[in-house]
Length: 294
Length: 285
Image (tube, rainbow over all chains, first blue to last red):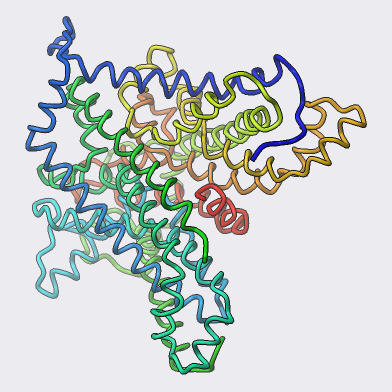
């Protein structure tokens, strides 16, 4: 879509666009270019010499067992976060769509976790599950389950999944609720007249009509789990025990700032950029077009 | 409501109540912990689930800093709250300002390389800080911006989302308004100030809520950027309070700080709920 009526000026549009362009060039393109450039270099431990090594850093990366393990960890983490988050919030949204009294109250009480920083969410959940003092850890021990996320990788993964889902429920809930409320009432009434109960109506009418929302949320949740959960991991588990919860964004940070492996970290950055670009293009190509109820 | 089924309605309320309680429990627990002493939390396992009597002591210690009963020093959260506040406001207002200007240029002018400019902004959508941390850190270090508000805010201020949102909105503004303004002799800047700006108020409010929360909740970036205590935002300051080891932590103060870190963005979401929902839906679509 284009405007029919425009203004004419040779310099004004450039002046208007300048602030954004300067920031984009300095803080996006320059560093991104640096990352790509560095990913082809290797620097010795003292930073005294660098040499061009072609795609060696990438070859090394994909032969590195800990990197592949981090990929697997990230995939497991994002699938769990996306699936659990979507199921729980869809259930809550369906219920909120049904009630008339108190619907706004429930909505307010369910959306505020969006405002909680991931790092703070990590701290809150860590406190509940801290093996020696946590209330939930204590309760689990009482029923015979020995919780210790400091030693057990599965427990640590469960901890960051719970914290990440807890924070994301509000977001999913809002979109599901909006989706449910845009389903035409006449369709549901027609199904009800034909004798379909609420359960059947949900699966045959509402859920199929929600599929664009669900699909959109699926992509957004994967992006969230991949890139926005650094704070949760850093606060709750530090990527441990061992490397059991070191997701990709955690590893790229750790290798760069703690491991000081510049070439390797730059190569990881480049891989991450490729993933984000793929996810974003995917979302724009396929998700956008489907957000039409037809 | 299609039919009256008291049974299903009761189930709906039960599920929702359970949801609300489950979502609220971690924060309730944090609040309860912040009203007890750290000794009470560590020595009575499980800790009491009812508020204790040290609410004022803990929050005074958390806000103004000082020595704890264990002798460790607590940095004042008051200063951190201020840093977070300034950062969040600058990021939110800055994003809105520069995106509005560039969207105005892209929609209302024809200039060479317009398409290229548009794509250069679009691609930043795909490069969150998390994927380019080390090189961005280097750029900021080279520009001497470490430990400054400029360094905390400027790299996060470019926003493709906001530019798109305003572009979409400007495209829906009727051309008749532009024509009328031109006939009345108004130049582009006058038109922007007197016509577009007032029309964009809703979009600006919606965007402000989302971007304020985004700015407030930054963690990784300040973690790299700041090394002096007076520039720590609160979300990052909490992390610095961990002494290591469950029993050695001043849990009451940590939880009080966590509560303090949550209140401002939570208030923004709850009080500006209408704008918040609009902002979420608009920016993500």
